[in-house]
Every structure is written in structure tokens, then in C-alpha cells.
Amino acid sequence: MKDLDQKRGFTTSLGAITAAAGSAIGLGNIWRFPYTLGQQGGGAFLLVYLLFVFAIGLPIMMSEFVIGRRSQRNTVGAFRTLGPAYRRWSFVGVLGIVAAFLIYSFYSTVAGWTLNYVLLSSNGALSGKTPQEVSQVFSTFTSGTWAPLLCQMVFLVLTAAIITMGVQKGIERYTKILMPVLLALMLLLCLRSLTLKGASAGLSFLFKADFSKLTGGSVLSALGQALFSLSIGMGALITYGSYIRKEDNLFKTGLCVATADTLIALLAGIAIFPAVFAFGLSPASGPSLVYEVLPNVFNSMPMGRLFAVVFFLLLSIAALTSTISLLEIVVLWAVEELHCKRTAATLVVSLLIFGLGSLCTLSFGPLSGFHIAGYGVFDLLDRLTATYMMPIGALCLTLFLGWRYPKAEVREELTNNGKLKAGYFRVFYFSLRYLAPAALVIVLIMGILE
Ligand code: PFF
Image (cartoon, rainbow, N blue to C red):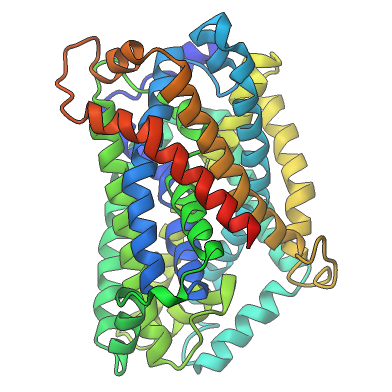
């Protein structure tokens, strides 16, 4: 308990919002969202995605805050702390910890790439290149062995260092400044991309909904993307909820985080797709998309090299505020439940992550021929977590809070013991009890059967 007390306390409501937004906004918005949308056919995917974010994602995010703030505990201990009768639900927390572990493994691969792109842009390795040459730089780097592993390791060390030094001050102080700068740069990128010749084809791809392209699988991947992007369904925001002040408004916090997260994803789409079409690239090229497209946009801008460095640096920081929350889920559990020392837990977990994470990284190179159930290690973990584990975790959370935990207590937590108005409560509770679980079950079944 001592550790929790010591760490607790975002000092302002803005601090809570920026920390949760820091967890939500990351590679999921700028790297995963565009490439998934590109693979799943564009506009129709976007509509379904937006629907999932606000109709299901926001209520689940608020639920995680409620569980976290009420229990003041890690994701596993939270259920037991809410009442001995809920002890059995701790498995939801365990599922979350496993998911965090797996996500961090492949996420750190991409975070490492991003870090290297800071270097590549600053030493001019991407400047003055044709789109084909830019793609070549990406595949040469990612298919190597030592360079991508080293970048991943540096990223893991950075995250571990922040976690051991104590999270709150760092996150609160820096995200407040850096996120708005990232937003400004994204706007600039959008502007450049939109003024490229042939940009309109990209806009139609992004915003024109062609529902014939939607399949059960693409609806499931829109759901997975929504949960992944909001960092929900696995207890990250239970962990952060335990740091939110009692007087803060959980609904407002959730709404701000979901809106900011969606805004950044949309801007990433607007920055990327017009450029994809203008440069004659394929929107469905997968995880490499952002790294093959954006350098071309920078190359077509005055002072592009400088902007590229700043952009990839900020993207690395956005990734860092997400990996901090991923590692924090596991470390807080180890500290509170297994009574480990924070430093020791951080070290051991990071080493284990590097073990699995290096397989993800190498699956683009030396291990590219190694497949499990038809997937490389990276793709397997990405799919397993976002498409299955997070929706299942989210389903369990809605069942717990909507059906098992007393409604009056949920209301009490959301209204800060009756001090806040909660006109939204009926809609929220309806989604939690009926809409979200039904949609989650249907989408999961549709996606699995396909
Ligand atoms: N939401 C993060 C992103 O979009 O990059 C990824 C993530 C962070 C997922 C933390 C889950 C999580 F617990």
C-alpha cells in the first residue's frame, strides 16, 4: 500500500487527463490506425471505428476509471478490494496483465523503429529520396538484426528508467507541453499532405464509406483498434484511475481523452492517405505504411528535414507515454500483489519483454520465415491482443460493472458522492449493461466465424 500512497495523486484534473491521454495517444493513433484502415478498405471502417469509440469505448473507459478510483488498486487487486464477493473477477485483471505484456513486446519493436527514424531524418538518410528509395530504407533497416534490436532495447531502457524514477511528476509535467506540440505538427503535416497533387483520392478513400468492403473481420478489427487506441479492455486505465483525484469528474476526463485520441487518429489519416495516393503508394501495405509515406511528405516541405526530426521525436515521446502505462500495469501488480521492489519488478519485466519483443523485431528479418498458425510472431501478438484479448477483457468489464457491481455505487463514484450532476448516467448505464456487451459478443462471434 505504501507504494501506492507514495505514487498517488495527479495534482490537477488536467494532469489526470493528460496522463490518460498520454497512455491513449501513441503509435496506435499514428501508426496502427492508418495501416489498419488502409488494409480494411477506408471510409466504412472509419465510421464503424468512430461508432465503437463513443458508443462502447467511452463507457468502458469510464468503467475502468470507476473501478480504479474506487478501489485505489492495481488491476488484479482492484476487484478484491471492491468487495470479497468480487474476488473471482480478478481473472479480468490477470488477462489484462498478460495482454499488457504481449502488447508491450510488439509495441516496443515499432517504438524502436520510431526512435531510429529520428536519427535517419537528422542525418539526412531519408532526404532527397524517391518514394521507392524511402521504402527501401525502411525494409533494409527493419529486416536487419542488430540495429532494430538495439533501438528496441534503448526504448525499453528509457521506459524502465521513467517507471523506476516515479511516474506521475514526469508524465504530468511533460505531456502537458508535448502533446499540444505534436498536435500542431500533425496539423502542419495535414496541410502539406492536402495540398499535394492528387490528394483528393486519399480523402475519398478516407471519408467515402463503401460498405461493401466491410466484413465481419473488418468490423472486429475496427473494434480492436478502438479499444487499443483508447488503452481499454485490459486495466491500464484501472491503474491510472487509481491516481485520479476524488474531486475530478470521471465523465469529463473520459470524454476529453476519447475526443483527443480520436482527433489525433483522424489527423493521422488526413496526413497520410492523401500522400499515399499522391506518391502512388499502396494504402494496404501494412505496418510499414507510416514509415514509407511520411518521409516523402517531409521531403516535399521547406525545412522538411527539421520537421521530420521533431515529428519522429514527438512520436517517440507519444509512444513512451503509452509504454509507461503498459509497463506500469505489470509493475504495479508485481509491487502490490507479489510484494516485489519497484526497481526489481521493472528490471525483471523489462528483461522478459526484451526476450519476447526481440522475436517480434526479428520477425521482420531473420525470423521472417517462422510462423505460428500462419502468422509471424509480431503479427500474431498484434492480432491476438487487439482483436481477441482486449474485446474479451472489455466484455468482462462491462459484465462486471453493468451486472454484478451495484448500480448505486457506480453512480456514487461517477457523481463524486452526489456532488456532480450526471445527466448522461442513463445512457451510460444502458450502454454498459446492454449495448456494449451485446455488440462485443456479436462482433467477436462474427469475426471469429469468418
Ligand atoms: N493506446 C496506445 C496507443 O494507441 O498507442 C496503446 C496502448 C497503451 C494500448 C496502453 C493498451 C494500453 F494499455
